[in-house]
Structure formats: structure tokens, C-alpha cells
Length: 235
Image (tube, rainbow, N blue to C red; front, top):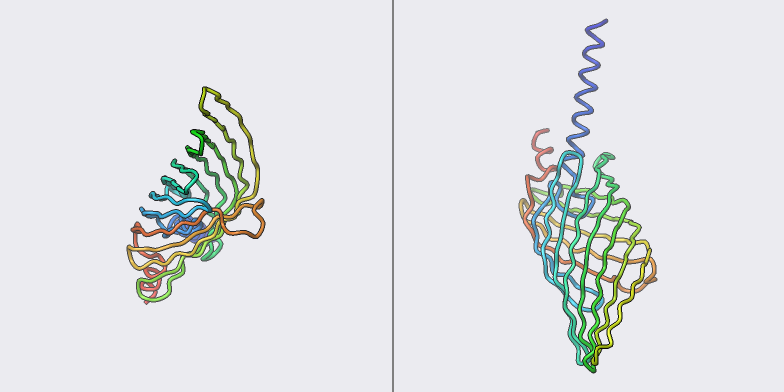
């Protein structure tokens, strides 16, 4: 009887260990990245302007960690602007079969300087924090090919500082805060160590309009494809 209980205890421990490994191995799929993370180049398309940058994601135990940075610029006959944006995130990974659920937080900083007509300059700095949940999976399709769909819903809080620099020394500084719901979704395609993805970001206060930001991503995945390795082991 004691031997039977010992076997049951060991089997339970193995099952828990496998569940933890499964969560860790698929940690980044909630954010549209390959399961074990990646390093990537990103072309960013804003509702106004474009940008270029990069991102990196990795795993640490049951945590999914990531960071990104990109420039931003826009030009038209009346004004021009340039700036940058960067953010970092951390999430806890919960395995629900093939699907992974990732509650987490992110913080970031952005700055944009605009030169308007009549020598008027406007600079805004944003500090933002986000908390919510993402869901995703990496599904093996054929050979070394897999698809990575993801969806995230987050509460977004942004604090903005505005600096106005006008000709004649008329400077002014103001501030504002904004709270809203952010929805981001993406679809990725991976072949062995290379992956492509596209993502979009919408806010609750923009109604049914176009996304406020889109990302087009090409990068190199870390580690092997989990689904492909699993299918081989069963054979």
C-alpha cells in the first residue's frame, strides 16, 4: 500500500513538472512571438507617421519577458515630428492545454517633438503603464512551419507632459492623464528559426476606426519549434 502511494506521489510530481515545463516552453505565444522568444526587426506604422525599431523576448521560469524600442517620424507641408518609444513587459504564463493565458504588466516611455508653422515647437513626453491578460498559442502546421495567433486586452493609463516653445520666449508647460482599454492582436508565421508577424493596436476611445498602430515584424526565433518536437517524440 505504501509502495502504491509512493508511485502515485511520484506520478503526480511528474505531471506537475510537465505542466510547468509546458507553460515555460510556450511562454511568449501570448504576445505573438515564437514560444521561447525571439530577436526581431520591426517596421511600425502609426495612424500618423512611421517608425523603425527592434524587440527581444525571452523566458525566465514561468515568466515571459520582453522589451521593444522604435523611432517615430512624420512629415507634411505644415509640420514635421520625430521621437522614440520604448517599453518593457513581464507576464505569468498559465497553461490551458495548447492555449496559454498570460496575465501581466508593461511600462513604457515615449517622446515626440514637433515643429509647426510660425516657429512653434511642441514636445510631448508620455509615461504609460498597462495591465491585463493575453492569450495565444503556437500551432504546428507542417514540417517546420507553425502559426502563432494572439489576442490581448489591457487597461492602459498614460500621463503626458506638454511643452510649448513659441517665438519670443512664450513657453508653456501643461499635463494630462488618460485611461482606456487597449486591444492588440497579431498573427505570426514561423519556419524553423525565422518568423514573420503582423500586429495591430486599438483603443476603446477610437471607436471602429483604423488601428492606432501596426507592426510588421521579421525575426529569429530562440529554440526549436515545440509542436514539431512533440510530434517527433511520439513517433
